[in-house]
Length: 555
Image (cartoon, rainbow, N blue to C red; front, side, top):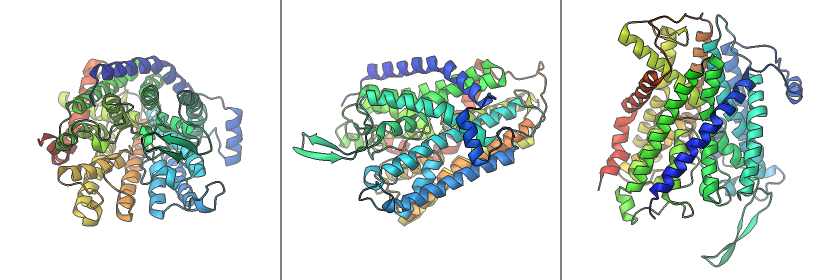
């Protein structure tokens, strides 16, 4: 298979144009949703049924308790109903899901990771897929957005301890943003050929000369929120390489557009809420620059077809969906790992080593280009605070961001935030390679074995969900370690973000002076880019040198 460079560049350019067109309208709508005061009738009914006082705002500890309690109940519910699948009507011959797989899956979908340790079509029925997993695709995406909104309120509000109401924010984002966008997207996917039914489908396999019965289901509806909410868990084990999920090149490109849509629009929401659209444009420019640079590098790495495995396979081909080819696979791989989506239309384990390394680096950036729904924005705002602090050290001034002083408390919280994920990735990956029973689940040899382990924990701790397919994670030990990475990688940063939001909200506003560092425009954008890349390099380069870099340089 050959890499079509022109097609790759045209598709990347089309994505940039489409995302730029949607940036302001969607960002403006998101701002109006989260800051609006009117309550829809369906929302009022839900508040009455659940006992939520929509007029009461919460302090950051109460807001955090809402996030954690909601997520904990969701994990327990998804786990329990997976185990009870055998007695739930309509699941056919399927039995209860293995407890280790059920545990890992519950954590995975509630944390917006969607790491799948199972073959969905052979393990879970329509009820689990539609009634549990697809629901969590909506709710986990909404949680990320509302946490980002809470941080923005902390930057905007003055001398208060209130950040909004978690239950109201969650309801509004789900009901007014994710549901209508997913509905429209699902209709378009059905028109594009994605399956949406409640029965199995007979398919004639021309190559084998036999008929196959392929499980059907509400695929398009789950596919829409899978990519729109940067979730990534597929209805089928082949994910977006499966023709029922991704039937043609046009649908494949549309899926990439959807997974980038909300994260790329949120910077406009940020600029609107803080009252300075230039701030939002600066954040969007940094996200876009990182996306474009990484996408081009991933495309180059795929087209170069380096590495011993690629050479042994006779070039590009193995692991790439023949309907798409290497160019769309490179575009999809870059975008899905730069967000926290993790959906795939090719086997990342089969990417040339340097391309596989790029997908890891994409996640190691902190999923901020443009990142997951909400998590990408709040991650880049934390990095903005770090950048402001570094600039303040250079000129000997107390750093400030959007009129808020960045003191010791704020810097401790920001520093802990940027240390959490690398610590989880490196500590758990290191422990795994030292445990014979754990590392045996990655049967490759040499640098590629370490790459499979490093990729797994990078994906889990960054709540991405994609994998190097050579690793098996359904056993008790690796399932538990990855579950721990997903849990801590999701909720420890959220704790720190909300604590930071509370600390900022209690402050007054510092007036702009001649010594204030402008946090908009090219100068700050370059500083923020440098901080993001340098922190990633300092944290992960030694580990990358032992895995994909070593493998890619072997001829």
